[in-house]
Figure 1 (tube, rainbow, N blue to C red):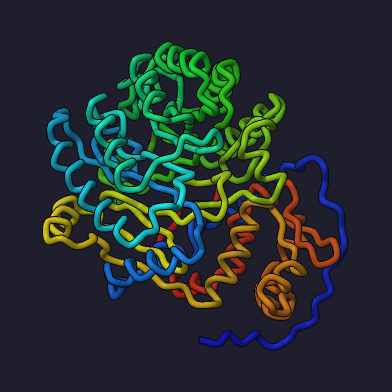
Figure 2 (figure 1 turned 180 degrees about the vertical axis):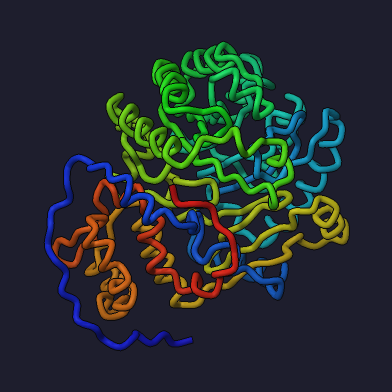
Length: 477
């Protein structure tokens, strides 16, 4: 389908150097802090449709073999022993690990159905287990799942592989870490959220610092290549002072990466959040103070602000990938392994293969029923148009590099990028005047304050967004 560039508009960017230090402007942040996508994909999942079938996915899998791109596997483990009240993930509350057995059987069926359309020589450079709580599985079940993945796809032992798992420190110990290492995992992510006992009680996640510290010490001793901690700001009873105390303790623990997520209170969509008293949540000004303190403390401690809510040590692969221009965004956030086809396995998982997105059902019974009938569980998805592919590239580079080189875009896609994106650039004029971006020739560069509001800048290039005005996204900051 041919894509026609919009009518030409004059492109006369002002050349200005980005400030070296962020100038915190609370009024500016409040003005731009609207709701918007996180752009873990473009188009976002709201554009997926139910006319997309399992056959569309298998055709994409077969087309992708010609590229010989490496694979990235995501496995969703939906089970949790206890529900955290803030959680917006797809999960099933149970203490019975036996319930995982039929799920693992269905996962294997999905692997078989998927792998028969893939060239088996393609290396699996990335593996990520998320949830839910992957460490809900017993050690034997974890080993069984790895064996099945290896049998169907052929896992890698390469030193540069990126095999990660999300861990709940309340459900893991040093034996768990040693077992995970023996299975080939070399990166772990620990959910912490907050170290304040008052906050932990309010969110139903009692987790003393000692649990996290013991696991981190063992992970460092075992030589895990990278360790991430997840924090959340905006939770009940948090203050700038209390969260600064959590950050001081976390910085002492010295993780390679940190994610500091903004809590989005949407009790009408996520039932567990109804257990949180809205009156206990920090107000808007307090949340901004927490965010400002977080950025200042982490950058002072030597962390690089990758973008949005991600921070990394300068020697971590995320920071290195950003410097080298190879950083990528996927459904797990930022990734250092670019140009992989992502295969999503399990309930609610999303695949990104060739020029399509394909998603499994969020309902477990529907997922199981499809696989029991011998077909992939895809219930919705999207095949990208040529325009989608161009915009996906531009939005991803902006989200990852914090800049767009329009000359490179022109060359890569054989278009006149300033002309093609003239409406988007016009929409960014106010952001430029407000100091969120600057231009150096044909390079659009996010300033330090623009990095904080990068989702707003990316929205200017989103052609699907105008049709989603009734949909609810989380706040940008």
